[in-house]
Length: 120
Image (tube, rainbow, N blue to C red; front, side):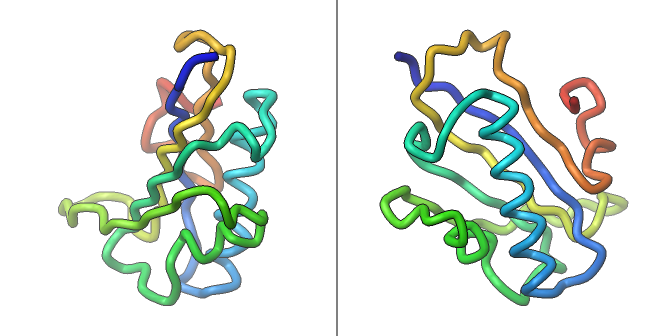
């Protein structure tokens, strides 16, 4: 097994706790499914949110997936002029047999625009 990092991001229409929960859960599930992994493969997850998302923590939203034993942390994304607003980015560290080239990075809900070279 190797430690790999999977990137992902999602875009919210509004700063709303329920939308945050739905978007983060959807993103994490897609990241795991597209890489053929279960939640047991997660080592840790780093979330960043743009400064306009303040209604709840992305990590709190992720707890809906029963990740009580997975270290989760949130940080604020830097406020770059002209950047896409209301974005949650994810860097998940996983234990898996995938090569770096085989890792699938996932962008949802319009966040594909952030990394068209990686989005699937």
